[in-house]
Length: 396
Image (cartoon, rainbow, N blue to C red; front, side, top):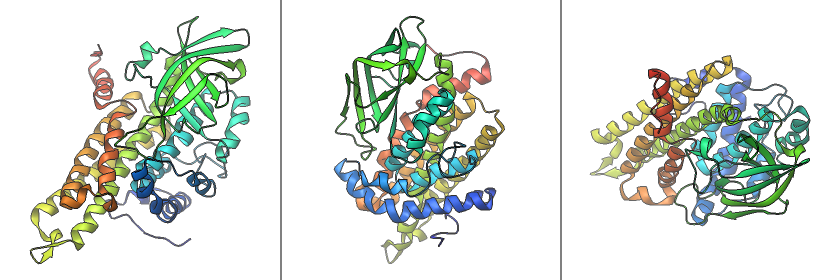
């Protein structure tokens, strides 16, 4: 396999060297795939606010799905959390929308089934999802509920014999307009506990409408879902999910993945700004020779390097099975905050060109705002960490 890059310019401390030879080969393959197959498409579709469905076929042949799930997909054994994180970084380094499409399918949806489903349910759904013959979505957030959804979920489920009847609404659900399987979380009216259901797109009463007018993640087809007396068989209820505590186990893992995405946005913006600074001339010399431009670049590299180190250790804790909610929450809060700084500095280096899509940095700048907010806001993740370190809950 020809290597497009031996080492990222942003990998100043050579974190990729922590991967073994086989895992590094997978990462370099993903880098080549994203650069040659995905990058040429993203600005066009980001501008149109449409999802390029041909991407599914491209991903299908890339062998990147289900790498974290032993027994599913093309890889014989599950890869490390470090490689999984770096793959999320690599995809987002090219485009956050495409990385989110993949992360919702391969992460949130598949992981919900893998961790929350019975073996029969895994074997029923995951092979087709691993092959990307079927696409998944994850429906948690509601029109009137975001951070408070754990204790105030309005979507309900009522059991009637071997069938569950779902009613309610969900919002900001990525992939939902075309997903084959949507993992819907609902509150059981009988025991007031949250349960998970795999809703198939052709089930009567399920409607997903695309949200228009977004200024970030424009390639992602976020939808508002309405569920009106949707009848779901007991066989489609995730058998190992009995309360929101079980759901939190899923969110703990995926929240760390969002922090890796934030790192990818930082790297993409930094790389674009560094290349531009070397070629853009003012006052007869490249702007890379100006002290204030170098200051912005070095501060950006510092944020990237510090965040990468934090995420490496988070991955090690995950691989050891000892990471906690506060570990992923601190990473999500910290790295997304540093991301906001980096994309702002990068946009400044471009001057007026920084708001033009063809230079890429405007896309990173806008998409950073979505990553900053989802999978728990900075404030909510801060309170999770605050409770862990003080022993006192400051939640209202």
